[in-house]
Image 1 (cartoon, rainbow, N blue to C red):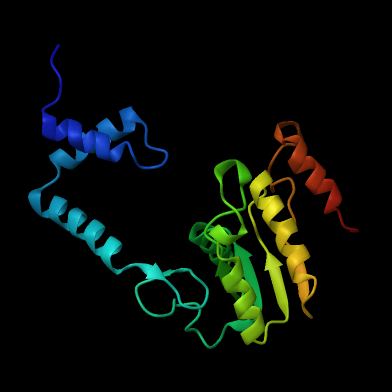
Image 2 (cartoon, helix red, strand yellow):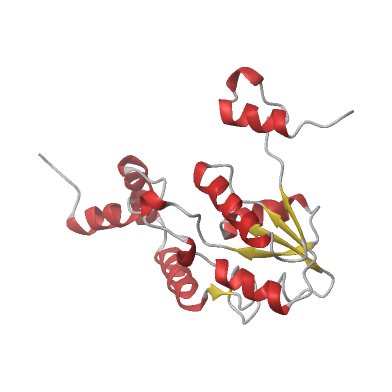
Length: 199
């Protein structure tokens, strides 16, 4: 049986290690990369190496940055009294795309998950408490993902933060705009009912 050369197989293997990339997608990407020009491949490889070498966590909020502080923490127009707690930089970017939130963030880099051996000390909770103690924060918005792990992390944080003199809120969860109720799962519907408000 004829197969790909070793160099192509190695590329497919590396690409298939990426999240959400199965063997067929990795194969398609590998063949696309091989058909790119040498200059394009070098630019892609350079971007990978550069991103890995120069990207680190912001000293304040733990968002990704290539400087000491991220662009949000360096922006003096942001409201530093309100901190939105998110699980990952992807969640932060999703909220930023709304252009409706003008506070700052704290990125936990994960959720508490005993099944995966991830406890409170494995994510950036201590760093959040340090910020609360040293900054003039008035409100913490818990925007953890609506998963079992995200919910348990939010509950843990709300109990932890109850001893501080600040407002702790949780983003609402429910049926997405344009979604059909028949396709919503039970947890989403429960959250939607809990978050109902008068018209």
